[in-house]
Length: 235
Ligand code: BV8
Image 1: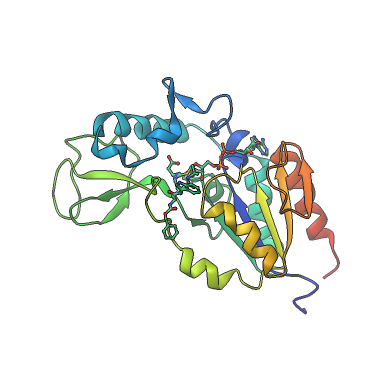
Image 2: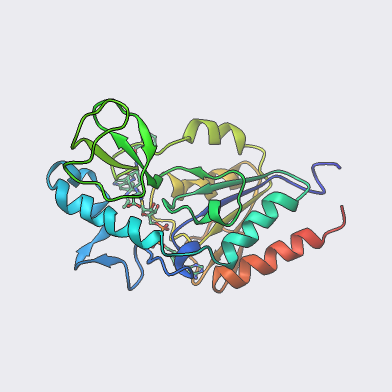
């Protein structure tokens, strides 16, 4: 197999890929929580109001556990398993729906809702229960210092160095369900294009002029059709 027949595909997903699973996007109609702008809560406001921010994430965590992956998650996982070339999946989402759809590798640059981190010993641990002041770190035993293992505004996203190296030879960059308003993820398409990738956007509405192609519609339909077309190509 020569690489040109199955070029390296890099996929960046945002909240829109989970919308059809019933998880509200940040800027969509449901992008508010108790009348508050969620963008204000995904910040180190945690230091100012721990209980409010913990409650915000506790409710999203319990809601996530009742949700299921949708056709877009399943199509991406099938592409990762069956495509003869490399597929690198990067997500801004903190849900685990890509993993539950069977994706073998997911790079969560904004962290994961089902993980917590101890502010005292920095140990990251699985988290499916509510976090509150009595929550105890399994590693150091400290109570009341567990926070969601997510990247808030003003904090540095994860895996940027690794991904910068791993994705430099991408020839196809697909942005799926992202408004392209949060940095540095919003720069990824610009970087990919400057390195020679063809950039495709899957969204309900176009977000940015950097894309070579815009495929309109719900990701469950458009991504499934795209993956079908890629996997039907002769090896
Ligand atoms: C950093 C985790 C430094 C928590 C999140 C001024 C200018 C430029 C930048 C900045 C600035 N001031 C500050 C910044 C930096 C800041 C930033 O970008 N701010 C924005 C608001 C301007 N960024 C940061 O602080 C980042 N850190 O910069 O550190 C640094 C960087 C590099 C190296 C060294 C130092 C940290 C950002 C991470 C914040 N954490 N999440 C949590 O989730 O609670 S961000 C959070 O919001 C999500 O993770 C996601 O990334 C973002 C929402 O974006 P989307 O996923 O795109 O969702 P959105 O609702 O916007 O769009 C959904 C899209 O789907 C829409 O387009 C819609 O049309 C589409 N859609 C809907 N349904 C469907 C669909 N598409 C297809 N099918 C459907 N069915």
